[in-house]
Amino acid sequence: MDKGCENINTDLAQLSDLLHNSKYAVVLTGAGMSTESGVPDFRSKEGWWNKINPATVASTSALEHNYDLFRDFYQYRIKALSQCKPNTGHKILAEWEAKGLIKCVITQNVDGFHKAAGSKNVYELHGSINSIRCDSCGKETDVQNFMDNADCPVCKGKLRPGVVLFGESLPEDAWSKAIEEIRKADLIIVIGSSLTVSPVNHLPFITKGKKVLINLDNTDLDSEFDLIIHGKAADTLNKLNGIMKTD
Ligand code: NAD
Image 1 (tube, rainbow, N blue to C red):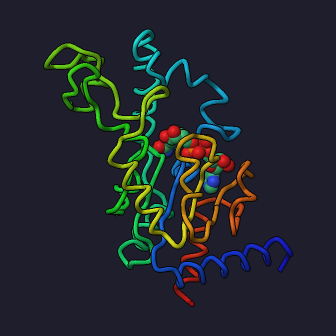
Image 2: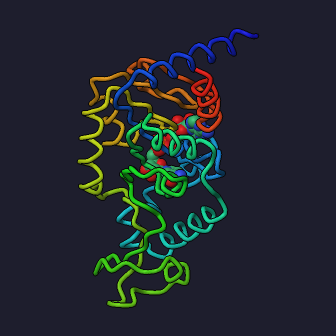
Image 3: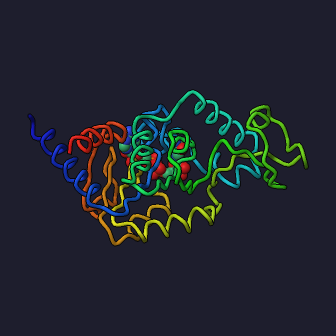
């Protein structure tokens, strides 16, 4: 066995122990959780923000002043997402919640994959791309209306996805619940996040418990974690699940 392989096995064994011994484990996920489903993240080499400036498409300013481009961007993402599905990692987290190994998933993702995989306690801090509403009157409507370039059927306002845009605040309910969960946690596992988006990147450090990061690339906050596993989310969770079952 090479040294790298040995290290990862030791790290996985350590995380398995942490999970088994924790009473309140909470998971926080980012875009890296879904790249193995074929959904690009934002800040990796292949991520969106290397191709496009977020302020031009995913902001309140784009919604207000550049609606056609805003709508094109989200139509493209909704269409691309419809061809992807939750991966093994999402399914393992749902299984762990059902077994009581983790209490909830707090996510920055807007793809809805945690719920689709069967996780029940999910806090979507950046909303959901598939819930479409009118930006003026708030009335919810079918995704297809947005895809067909329709206006709001009630007031003719602009339709938009229920995601948190640059320039908007996070949904209060999900945010306060997430803080409450992390305060109770004795273990937090962050998966697939560059930890650059505020305020979510502060969340892991609210806990008094252990902090673990599973991420492909280094982040500026790596040194704040008790354990770091550099690897792919689904692949790592799959290996970990194998160890947990044999423990
Ligand atoms: P980010 O793009 O800033 O960072 C993603 C991180 O995940 C990177 O550090 C990268 O190294 C890592 N990563 C990539 N593939 C991985 C894999 N297979 N396994 C483990 N790690 C992997 O993403 P973020 O920190 O979540 O940034 C937040 C913003 O991105 C949020 O606003 C979120 O709404 C949005 N976003 C969501 C989706 C989605 O819903 N799937 C997709 C793209 C962006």
